[in-house]
Image 1 (tube, helix red, strand yellow):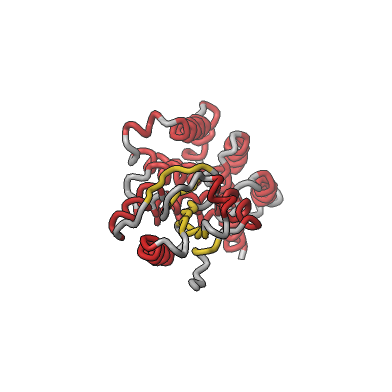
Image 2 (cartoon, one colour):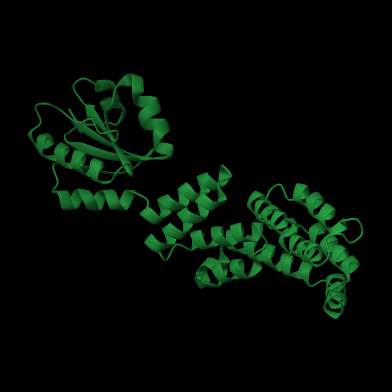
Length: 287
């Protein structure tokens, strides 16, 4: 009896949840066997070994065709052993008869997502849960494992834009293959970058930057520039502009820059890492 969490016996009771529904998130490999089947006794140990070795990249669902005739009939099983890979509640590949381990590995590698793609999926889950740092770690690991995975670069660029890290986002997109640049998701992030650049280089913003360059103590220009940037959700440069004002003269106009910075923190609630970083910077500046 194999007690690996990646291997289980299929019954009518667990079939819907553990096989059909579970195949939406993990590839399920069904092993149809029988006690009287000699080739099964050769193949099943290979499948069990690989299920453990692959560490959860797929789950091995063992079906005793004698005890679970209803399930066997559902898949039209006529000879054994039969192995069927299930993904997204649909059969995606199959083979019959005992096969050597090398052939079984080839079968699995064709139906399983790459390790990089699995990291990509984990990154999206962490991103959805608000764990931005964890998502970035998963994406960088995905690229280390699968350097051709442009989807990870696009996600990293999109995450960078949450903190208005335009240069970093552009660098990620620049590394993508030409064919990837036709992808809708690539275009979406590229447009986001272009919009951010236009906001930072608008005539109004340019005029205010010129005033600040001419007079670093022009706090009014800094406040106005921060307002222009915040209106376009360009919170990182807006925060930086206000932090610089606080650093130069925290008490100017009854601490107007500090008060405005705290006000903008509330507007940037969808960028918690950015807010956290600038809250720490503000605290360090005031101490």
